[in-house]
Image (cartoon, rainbow, N blue to C red; front, side, top):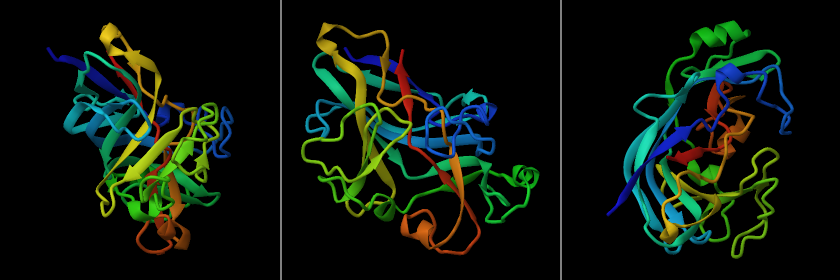
Length: 270
């Protein structure tokens, strides 16, 4: 018999109620800043969830395949987009999880680009004050140019990147390059990958917080890979040559762009 549990999506970003107390602009943990992006809404669609026995996920156990929106707002998870029913294995030990998501993020919020520039979702206008940006923020969608954003490759896949967690020590994964980013605030190592020629979805693989032998019974709680961090959310920038190079904008038009910042998720099976 298949075991169906609910997968709750907890914010991978700081919420607006925590602005000033939790986010940071210098990349150091527990180093708050006064001017941080405010997140009113953030959502994305999960397409597949697999349990894995290694980083390459060579023998995955499929826990979910479908299309489920998960989302948070300034008060927590969004009703109707806060859980996914998953199929749990009845045997085997798994140490990793791989999640496939759409490259199509739903956002509403605003943030400071520099000392005199404020940006809001849904518009390229540069605002002089926070109040103006706050009033202008509307729902919008954002998609990375994945062949540019993950252009470094990860040693196995043509398009991908590794972010090494600052406490994990997993900076020598067999078969993978060690040239990618090291996180100053996220404990967990994550491998992102894009199938060659694709720009509409990508997957990320990370460690489970403990190995689980499902042959010994179903654990009451499983905390997946990455925990909620105390920094970042959406980020504000002006579209220039650098944002084009890294796949955040199509042209260097000089106007505002708002994009997701810091791919960090927390999932709990209960």
